[in-house]
Image 1 (tube, rainbow over the protein chains, first blue to last red):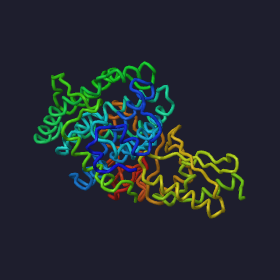
Image 2: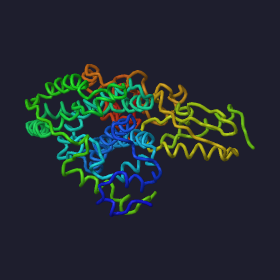
Image 3: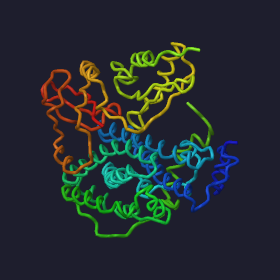
Image 4: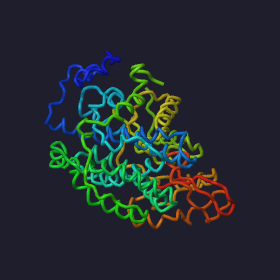
Amino acid sequence: MAPSLSDVMTPDAAALAAAAGGEGRAPLAAGSADHDLFTGLTRLGDTALILGHRVSEWCGHAPILEEDIALANMALDLIGQTQLWLGLAGEVEGRGRDADALAFRRDAWDFHNLLLVERPNGDFGMTLMRQFLFDAWHLPLLKALEGSTDARIAAIAQKAGKEVAYHLERSADLVIRLGDGTEESHRRMQGALDALWGYTGEMFLGDAVDQRLAEAGVMPAPESLRAVWDQTVDQVLAEATLTRPASTFAHKGGKQGRHSEHMGHLLTTMQWLQRAYPDAKW
Amino acid sequence: MVRPALEQVWSWLGEVPDPEIPVISLTDLGIIRDVAYEGETLVVTVTPTYSGCPATSVINLEIEKRLAEEGVTDLRLKRQLSPPWTTDWIAPAARNALKAYGIAPPIDGTAADGVLAGRIARLTGENAAVECPRCGSTQTEMVSRFGSTPCKAAYRCRDCLEPFDYFKCI
């Protein structure tokens, strides 16, 4: 039976999974290697998905045609990568959920994306700054995942890394151009940096799941990505004449399913069609 | 039961045009990684160009359609991610076809690598080696790393002033 609207009110992941076609298989036990792997994969896949959705909101609204096309292309890359990560997560779970089921039939508390990527787009500068702070983390993460002991993860990371290298080149260039641009563009970029800074720390905070995945050589420890991110961010901000905020405060919880108020609104838009017309196809 | 020779299958696939860039074929593009029989089933291994490329499902459909025309129905399409597709695999003859079609072919070894030093060197957006496919000038400049499809970047010629697509390297 496909989930109906009432499922939205049911904070029961197991029941939703069963309804999506996974009858007969027990949910993965918390703390098991497969559960850790599923969680790690949904953190990667959900982060790519939610940012991909956010970026796609610009389609038809960007300030110039070239940027509209670039944003749509990047959203497409991220959603393509989502299909790979969440597809593998569904396989690992073994309960009949594919990438679509995971994307469209979970509620906020089952999403494990970083809080940074669910931030609203704001103006073009805010969107670009968010992208740069993310890309500067995403690329070294994928480079590290290329060495995963899980060959499936290494293959996806290799594929995605080639695409993300272009994302970082673009977002870094534009942060520099706008930061070191006019008085107004500089003011907006510094404002965006200050507003988003508190959401960057979560990228480098590991929990017990991260620790076990790192010990098994499956995924890098989040803390290990800090040095290269700091280096990229410092160099680009210096060139952009922007000032790195001093605060080390970090909003956290997204990776564990505790989200900001924006997440529900985002899912309402993103999941509407599959909620209203379950199993609808083109 | 139809069980054509593998060379024959390769040659049929060489006649299937890429849905986005119809002047080159799927084999020219280098995305057909293997053709083999598993028992009676023909297995065609395909690698995606970009992970989110919308042409992927159309490509699979075109492969099925072309082989069905030859009576091959016991067919399985296998997706292979590793090694990831690279523009280095585009056949030499296909590069000329791209140019004649108005798309500057990829220049091997210029893929984005995310290395900051390289990025800063490219900040000017200039890449004199990319030739304008219309007038042949190398006085060209990058407008955007992202173009009309995931595999292309937007360029412009400073001599004839025409915008054009560059098949960017990955």
